[in-house]
Image 1 (cartoon, rainbow, N blue to C red):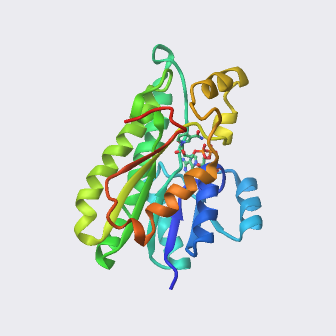
Image 2: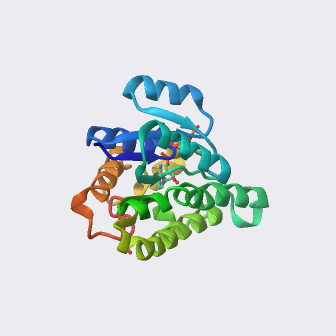
Length: 240
Ligand code: NDP
């Protein structure tokens, strides 16, 4: 029987590429989204992948959404915690709401996504967790105190879960993308984007599919001994 994978924020951007790659690799995939019904419908029409709407920042919504996925597709073996947002501002202008929204989505959202599936993975003796962090969680970034804090926190979650899950056949790893050509990055003013590309030794933005291939490897049986790791995929922009 095919394993079931849950991809949060799996209806567009990097998440959509991950959902498609996992489907192609033979998994049953559920992709979630926050509110963009039009994009989600177009994604399902194009790929045949079922989408589910809930806010990852809300524990109860996440838990009941996950229960619905499991009722439809069976126990979730693979979780890709990908949903994320930015609310950028230099620190002296950052509003508490901007801090809170990003923490709730990118950090608490990862807890809310993994926590409800964790007991089942432990019971069944198998699980694959991949959290999509960011280069800016590794190095910090001007105007992203909130975002960098969450993405660094996500690495802490992964390293801790790796230790807790190892004896139960569960691995937890992170992928830290550099700048990838999605709506999140294309929303940045062109001049800023050009400056960003100037800092990438490869001389271009990454493609969502390049992140999806990292994820597909990490969830495979071949990656069973990789646990608590971070794969940086950033065109040589930053080394840990
Ligand atoms: P996009 O903005 O293109 O897509 C975000 C996805 O997450 C959408 O499906 C969106 O749903 C969903 N989402 C957002 N907020 C919530 C929420 N509260 N609850 C549920 N779903 C939510 O993002 P990217 O593809 O660019 O980024 C994906 C991940 O990769 C993020 O975690 C991001 O931080 C990380 N990343 C991205 C980089 C990049 O260069 N793009 C670089 C490094 C890391 P909806 O469509 O309904 O809005």
